[in-house]
Image (tube, rainbow, N blue to C red; front, side, top):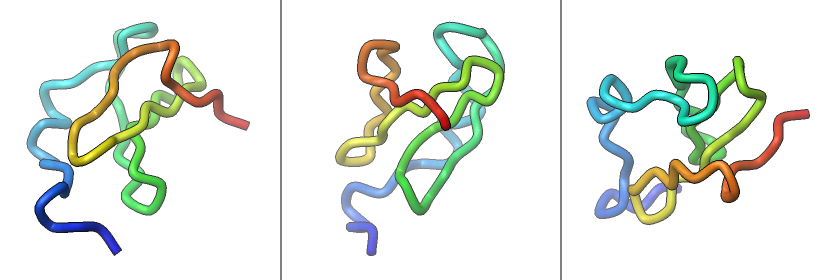
Length: 61
């Protein structure tokens, strides 16, 4: 279960783009990640804050 105090603000998603591909991101609530299908990367959300660093992103399978 997600802690409401650290929940991700979905409205923020509209303002964020992938730093590598410059395309839109998709929110994965279960994994708490922002996914860039174009770049094949998933950016973690920690304490409700998206970490938009390529070095911190997970490569998609």
